[in-house]
Length: 241
Image 1 (cartoon, rainbow, N blue to C red):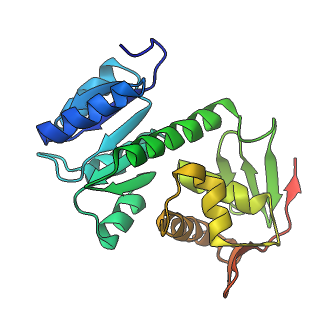
Image 2: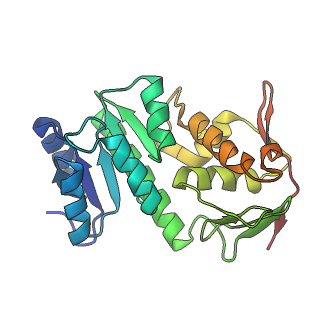
């Protein structure tokens, strides 16, 4: 039996065998797994229990996994991991674009699934508890203001810019190392740590998504520059506090 304070993971998968397998795997790792066959069942679960993370299949009866991720992201910051047989680059990018924090194609290595779940839980708890950033971690750059503890990012035109967990971590790396070229591998290691896998392209998608969000506001397009053969550079001067 899982500890009382164990993470609650929703497993939204219509394949009975895979759903049972994932739930059993998470239970062996000390987590509380809640099986859901459909998005509707997941909604009922969330109405009854606080959920720490959702593992979502794309191909679901009724509302599909991409629609569910988009809806969940619009309503809050629940960490979401897509696990799907549709593992090509297009589906991976679409999954991350609609708000999933990570994407793992089937068939997957059980140890990798657990590693990615744990990484997302650590990041989520750090965000909630302020462990990743010192107290009052506030930054100002090029007319922007950002409270990294609450993820409150405000553009020069006074608009609030919503960030996902992955985008938050990525921006934190850039803002705390301004005007310095950071390689893709550095960003991958700092944001994903041991959950990072060789040739993991998640960082590229999240960086592209972050740059597009910034670029919708004055001066945002010039904040993150690509350095050919080197990596990425946060071009603005940053003031702390």
